[in-house]
Image (cartoon, rainbow, N blue to C red):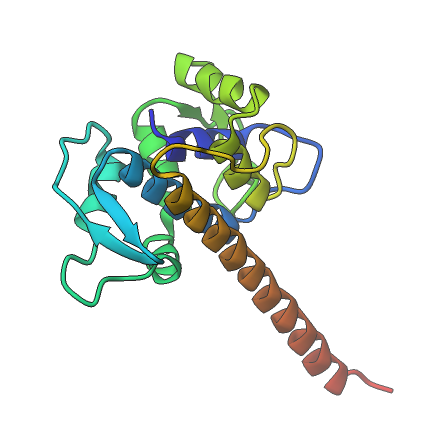
Amino acid sequence: MTTAHDLFTLALEPRPERSVGQGDLSLSLAGAELIDLLQAGAVDLDGDLIVPGPRPDLDDRLLRAAASALVRTVPYENVEDWLWRRGRDLAAAYQAAFEEAGLLTRPRRGLLGFGTAHRMELVDTPARRRAQSRRQEGEPVLGALAAAIGIRDGGGPQDDAGPDGEAVATVLAAVHDAVTELEAVRQRRSIENTAFANVWRVP
């Protein structure tokens, strides 16, 4: 399983705090995919530009789709643009893949934590337990991605000292900035909608 799969699993775990936003999750999943591609040697970063490498043999269908979506001509795409482009409706794609693999069930009607689809519940599988274990052990990359979408228990700052440490940190920072920007857009729209409603309010 990939970091993106583990992140999606954590997003669906029941928790008392606010639910995970679908847009936030999609952006973070796109970042997780890029980190998985970095670790697979499929890409490298030149500053914040995503430089495609050899096409590796990837077992995961969604990660293969991510690799196929890379811009392979100069000028290469930067990390921020990748997050917004690849992240479009990505949470829904992961939900569909989980359903197809039998990792989600539909026990009753209701709302999924991050969207308007019927409520889904995770099946107890080794993959789910692996994601929970990574979270409990404070794995830093998964923890930082989870924190970006409001899951703040477990994990910690990115301190990877390996060869991809700087590149991973660049991706994590871009995910955080993108999620922050999305929240600012939501707040601005909320203010605009409230102001518009007040115009029509009877004194």
